[in-house]
Amino acid sequence: MTRPLVCVLAEGDWPALGATLDSVRVHGLRAVVGVTGQRERGAAPADVRAERITWRDDFADARNQLASRVDEPWLLWLDSDERLARFEAPDLDGLGADAFAVRIRDRADLTPRPIARLQRNAPGILWWRAVHETIVTRHPGDPPILDGIEILHDGYAGAAVIADKIRRNHAIAVAARARGDESWVYALEDARFAEATGGDAFKAWLAVFNHPDAAPAGPGGVDGRVEAAEALAAMGYPTPARVLLDANPRIVSLHLALLLGDARQGQPDPGRVDALVGLLRGGADDRYAMPVALLGADRAAVEGWIVDRAPKRRGATGR
Image 1: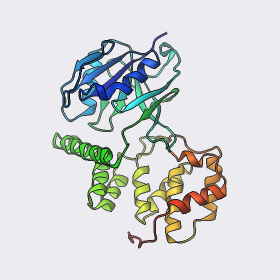
Image 2: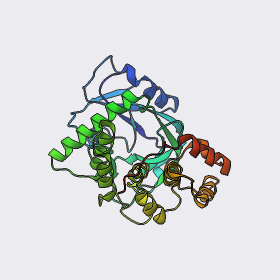
Image 3: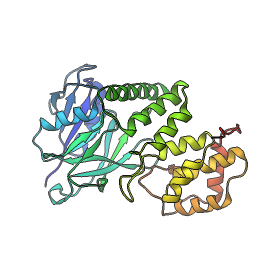
Image 4: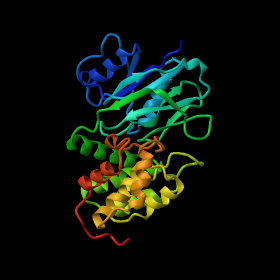
């Protein structure tokens, strides 16, 4: 039975990788770590292979470097602040696609969402984009979801850690543009940075929503505009969220964003509350994270959640 080699990119702080590597061992898998050398401390464990990677402010480039150094036919990628929580994959030899999305839980209070992390290690299968990198294969469309693998992300523990990541990712986006690269995810990092540093967040989020590459490449694809629509709704501009819901009414987070906006202005739309309750009881699009506390919730629970989290009344942007 073919099992994947787990690949991890890290700065070189081996003690900090302990939980990640332990989670790999628990599932009987082997790991290789691509070391960028930015922050070296300690030594690699005896059972872990280390490969020196040249860091060029580009996560896709780093992944492609590491993939080129190993011969295993399948690779499963973990970040250095992630743990492999579940591994119940079928025999990979029998899979027809070149890459798969697996489930990742970004925060304990959110449901897991799919993210491309499992790849066939073969020519023509490469990673692309300096940050929020994605896999490029010989097949069009989003990679199919392979249930049975779940990753836990520990990288959002605390405001200081989040602020550091926002600054780092924005710097990577700036460096990518300086090399002539362009992507909607760099606009996404502009918006997160503007929101964190007091810039014109409305303008930046609107640029994400209107970026032509943020929309799905084909019918039924994952929509990269959802986070922007949520942020704009929170600023008093609900139109983008409504546009996306017209195309896919099963995205729970957008319904919640609109209901929170309603609550800020007055009374949430009863019809939207009813529709949301139906989704939470089975029917939501599980490619988009939603609050765990609301799964299966009734009307009273949904209304209570909205009241608890509704921002204080403030003037809308008028835009």
